[in-house]
Image (cartoon, rainbow, N blue to C red):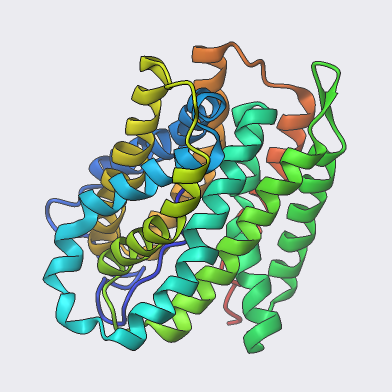
Length: 309
C-alpha cells in the first residue's frame, strides 16, 4: 500500500449509501481482491529490485512512474494548487511517501517480503493513534484493544528469527514507515481536505520524486540493474503505485471509503503468498501469529460500536 488514502468532503458516497447499478457485490469483491493482490505484489517487487537498485534509486523510479500515471488527475485540478499548498505538500510528501517507501525498500533487502507486508497494515492503527495524540480524537475501548493487539503483533514479529537471522530491524523499519503513514494521513486530512484525493496523491508523489531525485542520482548503482530488476521496478511504480490508486479511488467513489478499506486485510496475505510462490520464501509461525494480531487489531479498530437500544 503506497499511501494512506484520504478524500475530500462530498467526493464519495457514505459507507451506508447503496452501490450504483454497476457496483454489484460480486464486482466489488473482485476489485477489492484485485487491489489486494496488486498492493501485496509491491513487497515482492521491492524484494526483487531493491538489491540491484538500492533503496533510494528504486523509490525514485516508483515515485516518478506513479506521479506520471496520476498526472491527469493533478492537471485536472491544477487551479486548486497554490504556491503555499505546494510547499505544504512537499513536507507531507516526505512523511507520507518518500521516507516510508525508502524504509520499506530497505527492509525488503534484509527480510522476506512478508515482513514488510505485515507491518504495512499497522498504518490503520497508527492513523487512529496519531489523531488521538495530535488532535484529541476519541479512542473507544474497542479501538484501544485493537491498538494493543497491533503493537503486540509488531513485538512478536520483531523478536522472531527467519533462517537463523534476526528480522527485528527490518520489522521496526516497516513499523516506523507505517507510523509515518499515520502522521501523513492526519496531515492530509486536516490541512488539504478540499482537494480531491486522486490529485493529492499525484501531487505528493510528484513532490517526493523531485525531493528524492538528487539522492537517487548520487546513489544510483554503478552496476546497471538487470532486466528482472528493471521489470520489478517498473511494475512497482506503474502498477502498484499508479494504476492501483486509480482503481482504489474508483472503488471509493462507488462503494465508500469504509468498504474499500477492507483491502487492508488482503495486502499481507497476498504479500506472503506472492513471495512464497515466486521466491520460495516460506511463511513461518511467527509471521502468521504477528499477522493475526495486527489484522485482528485493525478489524477491532474499524468495527463501529453497537448502538444502544
